[in-house]
Length: 172
Image 1: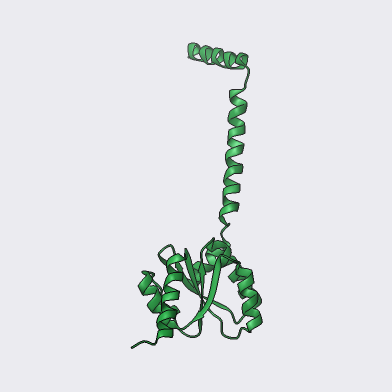
Image 2: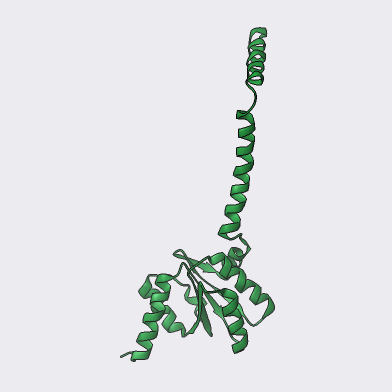
């Protein structure tokens, strides 16, 4: 029979899986407490970074209905539960991994899809939601400006255009 502490830990991990939009698995071997604290600060308030036993992670994921690749659950594992932007968390982890060679991204799960380490790193290359929306707004604004200029053209220009089209049609 499972002891109460393990049951409580699995229940807590299950709740975190259910609340998270993404979960990123990492290997933390070789990191100091200070470096782990630095990572937690870099990840921000929307990410909970926890060290847990692979068996407990596996059980909690199963209870929450989240698929993880069993091959990623080997060795010392820590998991980042992302409640906000997964792109921002992936960027912070990739940057941290660049500075700390012992930190390894193993993979994870986002929106119900199992992710490899390469996919998590590819997500880190994407623009976050705010940047993407700003780019879209800029593109739309440019198109709307051109349309407004066309609609604000003097009626005489429209009349000349119509006359030119009529002449071209008659000539043909």
